[in-house]
Amino acid sequence: MKITVETKGGEFNFDCEPTERILFAALRHGLTVPYECATGTCGTCRGRIMQGTAHVAWDAAPGFARLKRDKGDVLMCQARPGTDCVLRIPADVAARPDSPPLPSHRAGRIAGARKLTPDVMEIEVSLPQPMAFEAGQFVVLEAPGVLGGRAYSMVNFGRDVDQIGLVVKQKVGGGFCDWLFQGDVTGSDVNVFGPLGRATYRPAERRNILCIAGGSGIAGMLSILEAATQGNYFREHSGHVFFGVRALADGFHLGRLHDYSRAAAGKLEITLALSHEQPPSAAHPLFPGIRLMAGMVGDAAALAMAGRYDNMAAFVAGPPPMVDAALRLLIRDARIPTQFIRYDKFA
Ligand SMILES: Cc1cc2nc3c(=O)[nH]c(=O)nc-3n(C[C@H](O)[C@H](O)[C@H](O)COP(=O)(O)OP(=O)(O)OC[C@H]3O[C@@H](n4cnc5c(N)ncnc54)[C@H](O)[C@@H]3O)c2cc1C
Ligand code: FES
Image 1 (spheres, rainbow, N blue to C red):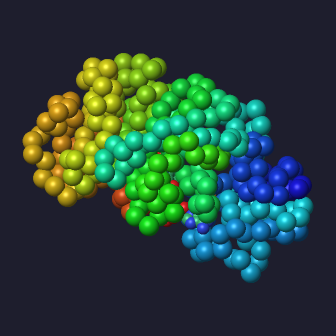
Image 2: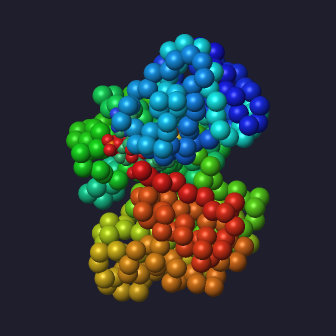
Image 3: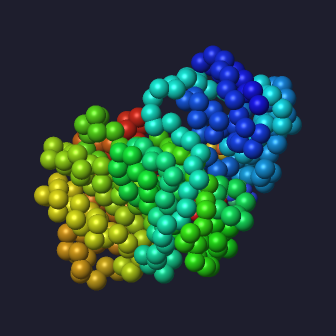
């Protein structure tokens, strides 16, 4: 199907398969169309159908709440073209077909799955063609029998990888989580679309790094720390990671965090914040390079970082209320310029 988008940055045309989401086709063609979650919750990917028809797979998507459906508004991440379409997008869109890494569709396979804690699973997804991505990005997975796509951030990092690692925090009753946690999914085929997301590590900015993660929000931060460690970034810059979990036993990938901290020779501080348990000691009993604090992760970051936000780029990821609280801290108190604050809301 032929799609035309009218935007503040001009008019653009691209092809979209009838089975493809209009957002994904636009991103594949290098258009900088607006989006955040890519999975129907945030409402950022709003477009208005001016000509033609589109099918919406998930009518109950929460992202519709802010849209005027009677005027033809659709979530581009949920809309598939029924005919050639003209859409109006109220944003300044540009065409950057040569700025990698552009996302694409891949047929992936679950190469392995293992529990990191009773309710956190790590999965390895093998890809038929290698994928380049920036540290901090995510993919959208579609699993057999699960309606719609789910976003997960890569925990690994490499130039062109043929396997990506993801960590999934169990949501009881969730479609993807029930599929993942209730049987052995190794060997299952999954559709992968990516890489996606703008909460990326940009070493050329030459800023110190602050990461505030709630639960599985640590995923993309692990990728960022891997990229920064590979590039010896902490020789010249400092890093501060705040990882929020409920109790000590809920922490995962702590050995890896501890190793990054050691490799950074004192320039990378890691803090595990426990929201529902008093820390037994000031440092983790098994990983003494990891400091323990009590309370919500944003509050722990506010306490430990007061007056230390100089030349900082901040990354935030996790459940939406936690992300919103951290963003308030970073904008109002820390006064970090918004172009250096990047986040993913795991809605
Ligand atoms: C940018 C981003 C990155 C994320 N990264 C991670 C991560 O690294 N680790 C992690 O644990 N979680 C991550 N999440 C959350 C994750 O995508 C899922 O929301 C979570 O795992 C729960 O999925 P579920 O299917 O079990 O729950 P469900 O409640 O079944 O679904 C959750 C989401 O799936 C979509 N969805 C549900 N039903 C449908 C339907 N019928 N049709 C279409 N779409 C539907 C919606 O987006 C919904 O919010 C991320 C979210 C975002 C937005
Ligand atoms: S990007 Fe489509 S609703 Fe979030």
